[in-house]
Length: 407
Image (cartoon, rainbow, N blue to C red; front, side, top):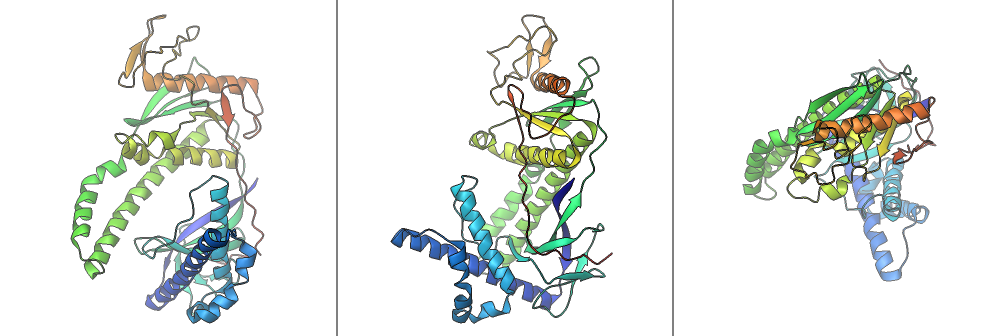
């Protein structure tokens, strides 16, 4: 199975190369903001909608009015305009908010679709005479189709290499997992081949953001006291960015390891279709929910299942997984269960249930039904009653592919 995959590696430019990359980033950001402002004004004054192909014709004229753009790779400027076009399409298709203007202090990127190369851990790009050192932590054997260079808020440079990678399906197993995510514990996971040998475990929530909260508050107070535009302001902004980056990296590492383990262990994984966007509106829980990263976890399970021939299913969000007794032959629904009640006793069979454990067990039983009904599952096509399959989007690149040469 061939899928598009992106490798991310750290760049170590010298001062001259960093200045060059900053100019490239600034030029791409300028083009994006210029055409965004132009599109907004044209629509408000003349009711003319944004058109990528018409805007593309203006770039040569823009270079005459702003000569500094001539030092930037022409294809990178076109890619910046294409990113704006994608942002508009996502907005009109209700996948994202209206495009925002890019800031110098935010993470910025430039795309280099062609005329790049890597030899002996040195990256060469158009308009730059010297090569940039790349730190490869893994070997790339595939053909690199395009690259994107990013600079994050902490000032680090990275190169993202887009390739087409072949993924082999994992060995099929009869094991099923039901996963109920939470705040106190990140997840309650019930797994096994059938109800007789199922095991329920709880995965502790690392709460990386909460643990770093005291340090973040201290840095924020110090940052707020610094004079706007001063070197101290820049220094403390970078310190804040470094700490936020650390928290984000810790969270990603945790989610990647847990999702990969579940994909390796289970053929069918059942999770809840949570309304996360609505749940974060609760000001008492929003920080904890955002820190947990439920949405990112579900996304990781989805694309890893697609890569390795596993099956991830979302149960309808109105399914009472926590309120239903998972004991075989019972199935009593305790409708009066409150959120504050972590344990409850089934009036029918007298079994005491942990609400998170009961939810994972019910999701596990749904997975058993799915596994029995479909011996040969397809991740996209099948959606049993009360569940919906995750649909995977596939983006194809038409850019010319260049062979990666390096160790």
